[in-house]
Length: 258
Ligand SMILES: [Zn+2]
Image (tube, rainbow, N blue to C red):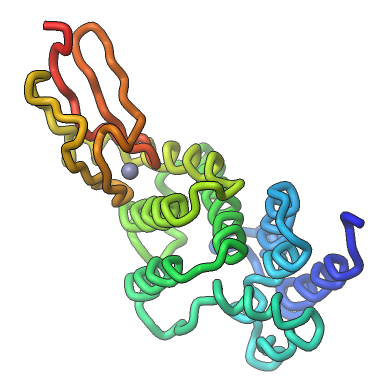
Protein backbone atom coordinates (compact mmCIF):
# COMPACT_ATOMS: atom_id res chain seq x y z
CA UNK A 1 0.00 0.00 0.00
CA UNK A 2 1.24 3.50 -0.84
CA UNK A 3 -1.65 5.55 0.47
CA UNK A 4 -2.15 3.81 3.81
CA UNK A 5 -4.89 4.41 6.37
CA UNK A 6 -2.26 5.78 8.78
CA UNK A 7 -1.32 8.49 6.25
CA UNK A 8 -5.01 9.33 5.67
CA UNK A 9 -5.48 9.63 9.42
CA UNK A 10 -2.45 11.94 9.71
CA UNK A 11 -3.81 14.22 6.96
CA UNK A 12 -7.18 14.49 8.76
CA UNK A 13 -5.46 15.19 12.08
CA UNK A 14 -3.24 17.92 10.59
CA UNK A 15 -6.18 19.53 8.77
CA UNK A 16 -8.14 19.68 12.03
CA UNK A 17 -5.21 21.27 13.88
CA UNK A 18 -4.12 23.86 11.32
CA UNK A 19 -7.29 24.57 9.31
CA UNK A 20 -10.50 23.59 11.10
CA UNK A 21 -9.58 24.79 14.60
CA UNK A 22 -7.69 27.97 13.76
CA UNK A 23 -7.77 28.71 10.01
CA UNK A 24 -4.01 29.11 10.26
CA UNK A 25 -2.33 30.92 7.34
CA UNK A 26 1.23 30.85 6.00
CA UNK A 27 3.17 33.69 7.62
CA UNK A 28 2.07 37.02 6.12
CA UNK A 29 0.05 35.39 3.33
CA UNK A 30 -3.53 34.45 2.53
CA UNK A 31 -2.57 30.81 1.92
CA UNK A 32 -3.85 28.02 4.20
CA UNK A 33 -1.05 26.77 6.47
CA UNK A 34 -2.02 23.15 5.84
CA UNK A 35 -0.48 23.42 2.34
CA UNK A 36 2.95 23.29 4.04
CA UNK A 37 2.68 20.01 6.02
CA UNK A 38 0.97 18.36 3.03
CA UNK A 39 3.81 19.51 0.76
CA UNK A 40 6.31 18.04 3.24
CA UNK A 41 4.35 14.75 3.12
CA UNK A 42 4.49 14.70 -0.71
CA UNK A 43 8.24 15.44 -0.74
CA UNK A 44 8.85 12.65 1.79
CA UNK A 45 6.76 10.14 -0.11
CA UNK A 46 8.80 10.91 -3.24
CA UNK A 47 12.03 10.44 -1.27
CA UNK A 48 11.27 6.80 -0.41
CA UNK A 49 10.65 7.73 3.23
CA UNK A 50 9.07 5.14 5.56
CA UNK A 51 5.35 5.37 6.36
CA UNK A 52 6.16 6.66 9.87
CA UNK A 53 8.45 9.39 8.49
CA UNK A 54 5.74 10.52 6.03
CA UNK A 55 3.17 10.55 8.84
CA UNK A 56 5.55 12.49 11.12
CA UNK A 57 6.24 14.94 8.26
CA UNK A 58 2.50 15.64 7.86
CA UNK A 59 2.20 16.11 11.64
CA UNK A 60 5.50 17.96 12.14
CA UNK A 61 4.02 21.35 13.09
CA UNK A 62 0.94 20.17 15.03
CA UNK A 63 2.53 20.39 18.52
CA UNK A 64 4.26 23.73 17.84
CA UNK A 65 1.30 25.41 16.14
CA UNK A 66 -1.80 24.09 17.98
CA UNK A 67 -3.78 26.60 20.04
CA UNK A 68 -3.97 26.35 23.84
CA UNK A 69 -7.59 25.14 23.92
CA UNK A 70 -6.93 22.46 21.30
CA UNK A 71 -3.35 21.69 22.35
CA UNK A 72 -1.74 18.74 20.58
CA UNK A 73 0.67 16.85 22.83
CA UNK A 74 3.28 14.19 22.12
CA UNK A 75 1.08 11.76 24.12
CA UNK A 76 -1.88 12.38 21.79
CA UNK A 77 0.28 11.68 18.77
CA UNK A 78 1.75 8.56 20.37
CA UNK A 79 -1.73 7.24 21.21
CA UNK A 80 -2.95 7.66 17.63
CA UNK A 81 0.20 7.07 15.56
CA UNK A 82 2.67 5.22 17.80
CA UNK A 83 5.86 6.09 19.65
CA UNK A 84 8.10 6.16 16.57
CA UNK A 85 5.97 8.94 15.00
CA UNK A 86 5.66 10.98 18.21
CA UNK A 87 9.43 10.77 18.80
CA UNK A 88 10.07 11.97 15.24
CA UNK A 89 7.66 14.90 15.60
CA UNK A 90 9.19 15.85 18.94
CA UNK A 91 12.73 15.68 17.55
CA UNK A 92 12.04 18.45 15.03
CA UNK A 93 9.72 20.55 17.22
CA UNK A 94 11.20 23.81 18.51
CA UNK A 95 11.32 23.30 22.26
CA UNK A 96 11.21 26.82 23.60
CA UNK A 97 9.09 29.36 21.75
CA UNK A 98 10.03 31.98 24.38
CA UNK A 99 13.60 32.31 23.15
CA UNK A 100 14.68 34.96 20.64
CA UNK A 101 14.80 34.16 16.91
CA UNK A 102 18.60 33.95 16.98
CA UNK A 103 18.64 31.63 20.02
CA UNK A 104 15.96 29.34 18.59
CA UNK A 105 17.80 29.07 15.29
CA UNK A 106 21.09 28.39 17.07
CA UNK A 107 19.42 25.58 19.04
CA UNK A 108 17.87 24.18 15.86
CA UNK A 109 21.35 23.96 14.28
CA UNK A 110 22.71 22.17 17.37
CA UNK A 111 19.82 19.68 17.34
CA UNK A 112 20.61 18.68 13.76
CA UNK A 113 23.88 17.22 15.06
CA UNK A 114 21.93 14.57 17.03
CA UNK A 115 19.29 13.76 14.41
CA UNK A 116 18.55 10.22 13.18
CA UNK A 117 18.33 9.69 9.41
CA UNK A 118 14.51 9.85 9.56
CA UNK A 119 14.61 13.16 11.47
CA UNK A 120 17.17 14.52 8.99
CA UNK A 121 14.93 13.48 6.09
CA UNK A 122 11.88 15.22 7.60
CA UNK A 123 13.93 18.35 8.38
CA UNK A 124 15.25 18.26 4.79
CA UNK A 125 11.72 18.03 3.36
CA UNK A 126 10.67 20.92 5.64
CA UNK A 127 13.54 23.06 4.32
CA UNK A 128 12.91 22.06 0.69
CA UNK A 129 9.24 23.08 1.08
CA UNK A 130 9.99 26.36 2.88
CA UNK A 131 12.91 27.50 0.72
CA UNK A 132 11.11 26.60 -2.55
CA UNK A 133 8.13 28.66 -1.39
CA UNK A 134 10.42 31.53 -0.38
CA UNK A 135 12.25 31.51 -3.74
CA UNK A 136 8.96 31.38 -5.63
CA UNK A 137 7.64 34.37 -3.63
CA UNK A 138 10.97 36.17 -4.08
CA UNK A 139 10.75 35.79 -7.87
CA UNK A 140 7.44 37.66 -7.75
CA UNK A 141 7.76 40.13 -4.89
CA UNK A 142 11.53 40.49 -4.39
CA UNK A 143 12.86 41.84 -1.07
CA UNK A 144 9.39 42.60 0.34
CA UNK A 145 8.91 38.86 1.04
CA UNK A 146 11.42 39.09 3.89
CA UNK A 147 9.33 41.70 5.70
CA UNK A 148 7.03 38.95 7.05
CA UNK A 149 9.79 37.29 9.11
CA UNK A 150 11.08 38.29 12.55
CA UNK A 151 14.65 38.62 11.33
CA UNK A 152 16.46 40.50 8.57
CA UNK A 153 16.90 38.98 5.10
CA UNK A 154 20.65 38.34 5.45
CA UNK A 155 20.16 36.41 8.70
CA UNK A 156 17.29 34.33 7.32
CA UNK A 157 19.31 33.34 4.28
CA UNK A 158 22.41 32.63 6.35
CA UNK A 159 20.46 30.43 8.76
CA UNK A 160 18.89 28.40 5.93
CA UNK A 161 22.30 27.98 4.29
CA UNK A 162 23.87 26.82 7.57
CA UNK A 163 21.03 24.37 8.21
CA UNK A 164 21.38 22.95 4.68
CA UNK A 165 25.16 22.72 5.11
CA UNK A 166 24.96 20.82 8.40
CA UNK A 167 22.28 18.42 7.10
CA UNK A 168 24.23 17.64 3.92
CA UNK A 169 27.47 17.15 5.85
CA UNK A 170 25.78 14.95 8.48
CA UNK A 171 24.27 12.52 5.96
CA UNK A 172 25.65 12.59 2.43
CA UNK A 173 23.37 9.77 1.11
CA UNK A 174 20.27 11.76 2.09
CA UNK A 175 17.85 11.37 -0.90
CA UNK A 176 17.21 15.14 -0.75
CA UNK A 177 20.89 16.21 -0.91
CA UNK A 178 20.70 17.33 -4.56
CA UNK A 179 17.49 19.32 -3.94
CA UNK A 180 19.06 20.98 -0.89
CA UNK A 181 22.23 21.94 -2.78
CA UNK A 182 20.20 23.28 -5.70
CA UNK A 183 18.19 25.49 -3.32
CA UNK A 184 21.33 26.59 -1.40
CA UNK A 185 22.84 27.74 -4.68
CA UNK A 186 19.68 29.76 -5.49
CA UNK A 187 19.59 31.27 -1.97
CA UNK A 188 23.22 32.25 -2.26
CA UNK A 189 22.43 34.04 -5.52
CA UNK A 190 19.75 36.21 -3.85
CA UNK A 191 22.43 37.52 -1.55
CA UNK A 192 25.27 37.41 -3.99
CA UNK A 193 25.67 40.97 -5.28
CA UNK A 194 26.06 42.62 -1.90
CA UNK A 195 27.48 39.55 -0.20
CA UNK A 196 30.17 38.96 -2.83
CA UNK A 197 31.44 42.54 -2.55
CA UNK A 198 31.68 42.17 1.24
CA UNK A 199 33.10 38.64 1.15
CA UNK A 200 35.09 38.38 -2.08
CA UNK A 201 36.78 35.15 -3.07
CA UNK A 202 40.43 35.00 -2.04
CA UNK A 203 42.66 35.65 -5.08
CA UNK A 204 46.11 34.05 -5.21
CA UNK A 205 48.78 33.25 -7.79
CA UNK A 206 48.57 29.77 -9.24
CA UNK A 207 52.05 28.92 -7.96
CA UNK A 208 50.68 29.40 -4.43
CA UNK A 209 47.68 27.16 -5.06
CA UNK A 210 47.51 24.27 -2.62
CA UNK A 211 44.68 21.76 -2.99
CA UNK A 212 44.96 20.95 0.72
CA UNK A 213 44.54 24.52 1.92
CA UNK A 214 41.82 24.90 4.54
CA UNK A 215 38.83 26.91 3.32
CA UNK A 216 35.66 28.05 5.04
CA UNK A 217 32.53 29.27 3.28
CA UNK A 218 31.37 32.60 4.74
CA UNK A 219 27.83 32.00 3.41
CA UNK A 220 26.93 28.54 4.72
CA UNK A 221 29.78 27.56 7.06
CA UNK A 222 31.13 24.63 4.99
CA UNK A 223 34.74 23.75 5.92
CA UNK A 224 37.14 21.76 3.75
CA UNK A 225 39.93 21.89 1.20
CA UNK A 226 39.73 22.54 -2.57
CA UNK A 227 40.27 18.80 -3.10
CA UNK A 228 37.35 17.94 -0.80
CA UNK A 229 35.09 20.55 -2.40
CA UNK A 230 35.33 18.82 -5.79
CA UNK A 231 33.92 22.08 -7.14
CA UNK A 232 36.94 23.28 -9.08
CA UNK A 233 36.74 24.92 -12.47
CA UNK A 234 39.81 25.49 -14.55
CA UNK A 235 39.90 27.92 -17.49
CA UNK A 236 42.60 29.57 -19.60
CA UNK A 237 43.25 32.40 -17.17
CA UNK A 238 42.35 31.08 -13.75
CA UNK A 239 41.24 28.20 -11.64
CA UNK A 240 38.44 28.74 -9.18
CA UNK A 241 37.14 26.79 -6.21
CA UNK A 242 33.54 27.11 -5.02
CA UNK A 243 31.61 25.90 -1.98
CA UNK A 244 30.19 22.43 -2.73
CA UNK A 245 27.05 23.19 -0.73
CA UNK A 246 25.95 26.69 -1.72
CA UNK A 247 28.10 27.52 -4.75
CA UNK A 248 29.80 30.61 -3.26
CA UNK A 249 33.15 31.19 -4.98
CA UNK A 250 35.86 30.81 -2.34
CA UNK A 251 39.20 30.94 -4.07
CA UNK A 252 40.60 32.15 -7.40
CA UNK A 253 44.07 31.13 -8.52
CA UNK A 254 45.33 33.27 -11.42
CA UNK A 255 46.86 31.94 -14.60
CA UNK A 256 47.10 28.22 -14.01
CA UNK A 257 48.76 27.82 -17.38
CA UNK A 258 51.14 30.77 -17.11
ZN1 LIG B 1 28.80 27.58 1.20
